[in-house]
Amino acid sequence: MDALAAQPFKAQLEQAREALLAQIAEQRGGQIGRAEEASDHFDNSHDDRGQINTARDLEFAVNEHETAELLAIEEALKRIQAGVFGYCFDCGAPIAQDRLHAAPHTLRCLMCQTHFEKQHPV
Image (cartoon, rainbow, N blue to C red; front, side):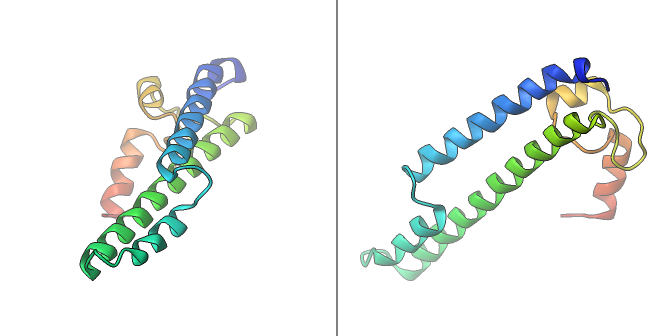
C-alpha cells in the first residue's frame, strides 16, 4: 500500500495510541505504575489474601494487555513508514481494506490469521 493510501490508517492508529495512553494515565491515577498500584493492595489489611491476589493479578493482566496493544500499534506505524503496511505478514497478499479498517494493526489476511489461530490455540 502506498503512503497516501496508508494515511487514513496512520491517523486511526495514532488516535488509538493517544486514546490508549490517556486511558492508561487515567486508570493509573497519574504517574503511578500498575506494579506500584498492585503492591499497594498489600497495605490494605482489611482485605483477605485472596482479594489482594486477585486484584494484583487483574492489574498485571490489564497492564500486559495494554502493553501488547501499544506494541501492535507501534509496529503497524513502523510498517506504514517502511511501506509494507497492508500486506499479510505470512503470505504477502494485500489485507482486505475492511479488515484493516476494523483492526489496522492486524498482521495477517483472514486466511492466514485463521491458519495461525489453528496452529497456535490460546
